[in-house]
Length: 338
Image (cartoon, rainbow, N blue to C red):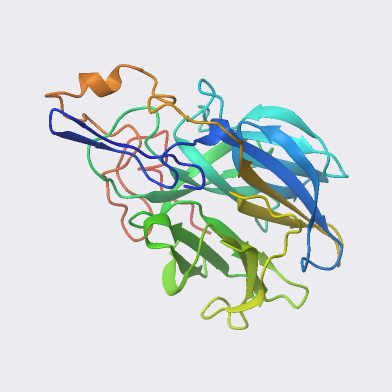
């Protein structure tokens, strides 16, 4: 996940694992920045270095003439996907609130990415982690989808992809109508690409070494990829719908702050784009039990099994994404045939 902090604790030989990217800082330490480009994404300049505090994994989309910014709330008691409306100039944001999945606020749903469907609805892709309850051992990582007409209330469609270590989905609709999906595997520093003709079944097509990605289309209609490297945010372009990639720009962000990650881009005009990303707050740490609903849960795991999976993890989704886990997170919900 773009923001997941990780620890490995051993309590009486019981191994408790959390996904690992940064062992000390979680979303409470993250600050969302905004930046603007007036040369079609070749170079961005920061316009607000504190657009949202205690916020991570930003995803921007223009929906019904509003710029909506989805993100993970880093507040210890409100950990879930939130949405805010960003001003036209990208310098301020007004919080709308948490989104709901099948009528519920799901604290373990994170890493939002959205597209607009042909019916004019929002389709959300997201990752379901294990943050509010301690978990023994590694579990398969699933990417889910959900749809909404208002941008706040979403109906879960179900899991679309299961990938070991996969988090942070990013999706773009290509000019031929198919979907290109990219999922990073942080521990492997790998980005796995998928293609789908119907938006239901996704097939692997290629992979690339890299960080947390953002997919978009350039002015020629070709997919482009943005992710962080040591030198900054780099941009790649594909001329064959994601089967292969070529680096076209090194660092596209002027004054790239150390620890910046998770870019998301919207197109304003043919030449103008806005980018949002998070940076890590200086001298900030996240306690190991920060997002646990029961702060003593780690101690209580001694001689106790994990119990039933409330998040659907541990249930392998079949090829068409209708696994038989327990709602409200989408397992057992069949995708509507088109």
